[in-house]
Image 1 (cartoon, helix red, strand yellow):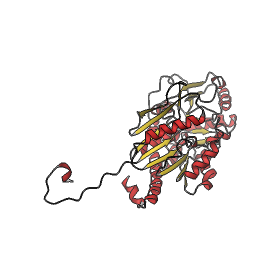
Image 2 (image 1 turned 135 degrees about the vertical axis):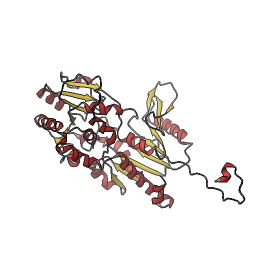
Image 3 (image 1 turned 90 degrees about the horizontal axis):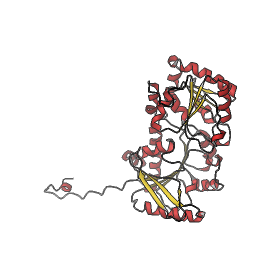
Image 4 (image 1 turned 60 degrees about the horizontal axis):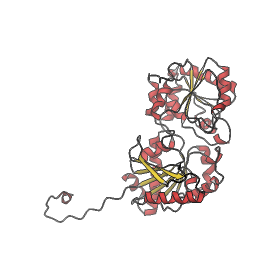
Length: 404
């Protein structure tokens, strides 16, 4: 080491080995980095502590006569995460779009020298990236995308190709795991986790955001994307049955026409908020809601909201989503209801719980949440990826994990 800084020594030192090239994780995601902070952002933030992360988003259309290009920026809320957004001329035929994306991808990853991990959230990005030769391919199936509204026809075929190519498959919940467990020999269930420290802020007395502070109590709130998974009819009927309750809806509206949203004096749509703002809104609610529709799009979901709401100290009322019932249904602080009448009754029970946090229901929830951190989830995923790298390189996987 002394020879590196020019200090003379009397004996010849063995030349030091060059530092290994850093690992790069290339994440292909259908979700914008700045849209809603959820599973991809939680995990990529944590992987970025030990490797370079490239977050590749879906293309943005530009003028038909413009030249395709990549917009590259550093994520403002995460160090070592590079967000890459392809810009393609609108109206391009599909084969031309895929060729353009392939050229842009090749140019961007040309400088990557160390191990490469290709991480997919959507099979729809496989056509322009299947030629890559990553050291590890990961498919993190956080949702059953084929069940979503406007799902592409070829999605299922591409998903099977991706599963066949993947070295390891993760699923975002137990229902998804059961549906896919026989399709891969290295598949693991990683349900929604929680950043407890972040949402525990809601247990303190926080200042109410300006657009919420004047809403009358009791307040029953929801945050998240309001789309085809949201039961608008249930919300409408429950709000009609309890006109003295305030229903606070926080989040962007997607794939639902504004005129199709229920309009009542006690339903308040506050729009999208940042991840950092969520505890302040949650702190001002008495009960947290998950009024999901029971349809194909919710058959396999494992909402991150359940542990986040509980970490914020709020009792939860949910429709009978399978993974919610299975994981949290026995907790006193989580009420399950199907009909509007049942939902109102469950909300009344939850309102009573919110007045008595010392009764033990919150301690019970905290005990369950103690084993559900994103840090633990990412560490376990990292270990499984290290196992694959170790097998391929012939190294001891335990040493690879220790070196991370």
